[in-house]
Each structure stands twice: as structure tokens, then as C-alpha cells.
View 1 (cartoon, helix red, strand yellow):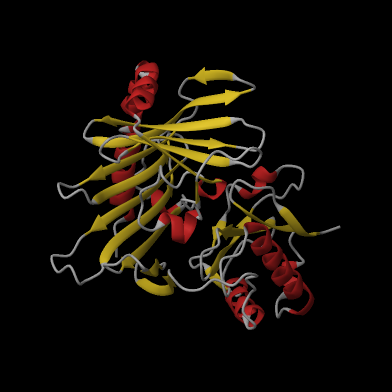
View 2: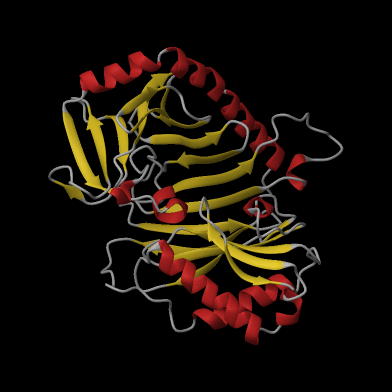
Length: 371
């Protein structure tokens, strides 16, 4: 069984390492930006689908949880559509990543070296032709490489919120899979640890293990259960032919109902609000987590941010291609509504104050509100 307290101590130290990097970015903001633009020898334009993909060199995040894509390369800046611009230096290393929406507002991440790591932080935005050059957020990305240029550690950290981290192990035998330990941890830096009350029992902490094939095309996911054992979850394969109109598999509802039956048979809070947290679509489908919050307020989406219960395993809705997030959301709503009509424990669901579902950073779609 993994020692969650030791892992969280490690993540806490990584988060604390952000503070001097953030201060460095603040003090040298102008110089970092000017150097990036001056050293840029090649610009690449892509469709907006790239989002922060370039700023995230993780081998698993894009295809597993983030949904971020590098996008389709385009020859020039489109006149009306949103797009992304990536600037590279003479060594083909990224210097900045600019995301431009259809209204021509810009947000730009800049890369800089500090304390034996590469960092990416949002430091410039343009709105109505006014440039603001400052460190805009406490969210920062950190990447450490080995001598062979392989990624060893990657993390996205919000200094007073969460840490998402990847730790990589490379086998001596190049034919064996790369191992990635994936952690998501809601931080508690503002409080002192209590030896009598281990932190991992009272905070959100999720652990997964990924086996990545040497050609990086196949990722096998294992979830860490309550006993600390790794249990097979799913396998994601890239390079297959995509459907023009991806749909959920024919057996999606029976599998969803069986998974939700098992969740509702557990010892869970008996009141509050139910939230189905969705994870971005991949080539093979999208994920759903089940959680229960002690409070429910449809006028304040923050009720879903601090669940009292969170499912140990993610349910994967299989599709015949990568769905747009709107289609995936609509599919999840249909599954939940069908369970409310036909499910084995539909009466249990209806005893809660309300039910909502959404992807991270999007508005909650309310499926049921008790009257």
C-alpha cells in the first residue's frame, strides 16, 4: 500500500517550490517576455483545439484527463476563427504559447528556466489592444527532464488549491512500458498536519498508475482502490480511424447502471447534492466520477467543489470516436435521466436535493432538483 502522507509531503514540497519561481517570474516578467519574442525563430499556428497542450508535456494528461490537443496546424492566422500561436527557438524548444479567441483577446503562457526546471506561467494578455504584462495567476506548470531529455516529473500546481503530478519511471529495456504515477491532491498548506489524524483520510487524494507503450500509442490505466491495490480501469489506443459522428456504445446504459448500482450500495452520505464529474473525451470515450456534497445550491455551482464522498473508480462511457465535450455532456445527461426513470435505486437518487453533471471549469447541467 502506498504511503499517502509521504506522497502528499512530496507534493507539498513541490508546491512550495512554486513560490520562488512565481516571485522570479514577477521580478523578471518583462525580460522573460522580451527574450521569448526576440529568440523566436519559428511560429506555428494551430486550430484552437490545442488550448494549453504545448505547455503540458505530460505523456498521459492530454489523452487521459485533460483533453488538450495540439490542434491542426494551419498556414496562417484565420480572419475570424480562434487560433493558437506557438513560438519556438533555434533548438525547437517552445518559448511561448498564445491562445486567441474569436474576439481577438489573447492569453499567453511563457516558458522560463529556473532552479533546474522548466516552468510555464501566464504572464501576458491582450484585451481591446491593451497589453497587460504581469503574472496573472498562481497556477504554474513545472517540468523536470533527465540527461537524455526525457520527462521525469511534470506538475500543474495551484499554490493554494490543488496539485496534479506525474512521476515517470523508464525501464532499462526499451521494449518495456514506461510507468507514470499520477496523483491529484487538494492541498492543505495553510494547516499543520495532525499525526493523530492522517491528512489523506480527510482530503481529496487520487492516485492512478499508467503503463505507456514504448511507441506512446497505448496507455493502460490502473486505479488505486481503497486497499492501495492497482486495479485495471481501461486502455486507450491512438491512431485508429475516428467516426465522423461518434456515439456512445449500445451497452452504455447497462454498464452505467451497474456501476451506479454499486456506488449507491456503499455507505455514502444520505443527503445533500449528487455531482457527476466528467473527464474530457478521448478517442475511446469519456469518464464519469460520482460524488456527493453535503450541500446543494443550484444558484451557486461551488456546492460541488468540496464533496463529502467521491467514488474510488471512474466509469468509462465507450464511444466509437472522440466526442465534442457538448455531445459527451448530453450523453451523460441522458444516462442519468434514464437511471432516474428505470434504475434499481432510482428512489435513493431522488431523496437527494439535486443532481448535476459537468466538465471541470464549465457550468453545471442540472438533471434533477427535488421540489
